[in-house]
Length: 173
Image (tube, rainbow, N blue to C red; front, side, top):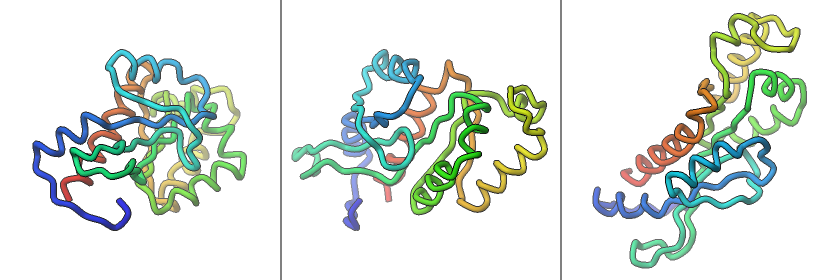
């Protein structure tokens, strides 16, 4: 938060979090189910270009709450709609470049699939499961992030709550 630190009360944090806006990367594809979740839950969101990741969040300017300008957080969610999309991405330098950019951020990779499918090779690629798992775990260790597998029915819920609680904890510091 720009090096400035404030001590908020629990009540103030609740009020601040009510104003939270989710940012969706404009290049994000096949995410209607995520946007539908946000709309259904009346969660404000904007669609704009994000340099790293697919989702982030900010607290908009609100003088009553002490925010003299929009306040952004280095918390990002990178979403892959399947193991196959993940495999397609790891074959390109672009994915690793994104991981390099994310190193000083709170970064999480979310794959809309199951870990069981990854382990059992239930995907179209000819990548062998041990090799794919090794590649994923190497990336996690090298770039200090975690991967979570979440069903597409729950991904909107996961993204929102992940960002919400990460920011809540930052506001408590």
